[in-house]
Amino acid sequence: MQFIKALLSGELLHRDQGKNVQANGRLRVGIIGTGKIGVDLLVKVRRSPWLDCVIFVGRNLQSAGMRYATDLGVRVSDKGINAFFEAENRCDIVFDATSAACHIEHAQIFDGLGLLAIDMTPSQIGECCVPALGLDEVLENKNISMISCGGQASIPVAQVLAKTIPGLTRIAVKSIVSPHSVGPGTLANLDEYYRNTKAGLKKYTGIQEFEVELLVDEINPDTRMLTTITAYCDSMDIDSLQLPLANMLKKIQAYVPGYKLESEPVLVNGGVRIDLSVEGLGDYLPKYAGNLDIINCAAIAVAEHYAQTAMLSHASRRSLIRHHHDTVQLEY
Image 1 (cartoon, one colour):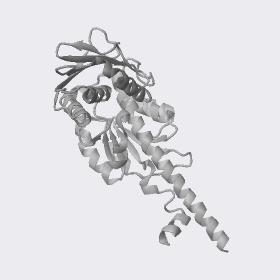
Image 2 (cartoon, rainbow, N blue to C red):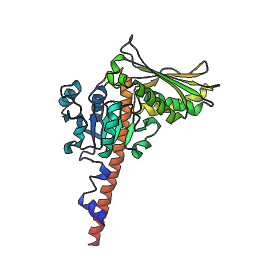
Image 3 (cartoon, one colour):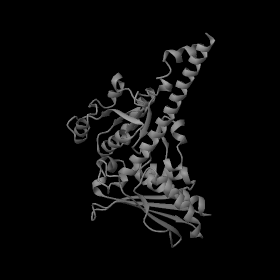
Image 4 (spheres, rainbow, N blue to C red):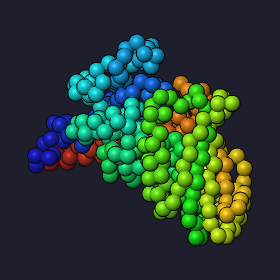
């Protein structure tokens, strides 16, 4: 009875397990980190029919990212992590686009506040998630790791290779990116980048031995992200890769339209190699910054899945209220 009373009073309708479903049908989102990734996320969130950015958080109101958000009319704060304790900044999802070291501190705070933390850093705190390979992790964990740009680009194809090639023993992943799309945060977290990418590859392929490289193309600064995945094995039926690769490509392109194979799989000494590229959407970042765009697109896919689930739950509660109200009316 108390549950029904709470429903009728609206107490549970808008709380919905901590999810603040707004009148516009969107879930409240916060972003911490006002660099390139954070600002591009902001643009993508504002385009989403499921998400509403209620606070954009950094430490310097005069930074380019803060000024950009202010010009868009987005509420901003220079209080860092402390901004999320303020009632007007209450949200359900927070994107952490700071650094691996900062997220170690932030993760505990977000957990205490009951927020879904989407970790854009390679901190290895959260559960790895690649949208093309499933989104169950999003509803089962309160901290989701987007792994790394190289991980989002390579892991789906690496899983296809691991499932298709018998006796696969080792996978090598090499990504080449523009110097303009690699910020100081990435350079400061290179060791974490390698560890997190390998952790994601291991989770989704089951293979134990990996080589991971991230290279900057100083000669062609406008180059889009290029990634090569090489699987080493004793023998290979290359035709068996065609269908599963095509199916995986469709899944990835559903949220990263600029993801494509550069060529058909080719046999190399000791294995098979697949070359792919990622071109960005050109939102806040230039299109060649596919390495930043792919991780942001993946993060938005995670947040939208979480938000859509909240909307369904919200609708179910409204239906329950209407049903109970109609039943009471009939009784009288």
